Image (cartoon, rainbow, N blue to C red; front, side):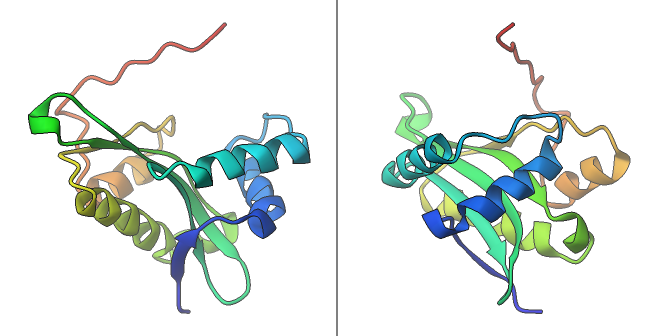
Length: 148
């Protein structure tokens, strides 16, 4: 299977939203027009990309990469990867590794000094996957606050 990583486009939206249901099954499906507008906004911003891992037939996985301008670290930006998901039928086949490697390489090419991500998954396999890519949980303390 040949996997290609590319930016998400409007024709991908329906399938992408279905894939996101596997990531967050309890989330409501967004209204199509609002989702299309959000994807357009992400695509217009040169600092953001919704990346897709695809084969010749379908979308196998996705992640969002945001490059954040920065006033420290000699003005080197940093990157945030979010919404990482591989289709349930394509897991453990190297799709996630190809997708994440592409996102990380894109961040390095943009001059980022670090790439960050957080995962809500507690499964050992998920943590081991991210560690196999070079991420470390022991270097920083991740914290978040969510709107009530």
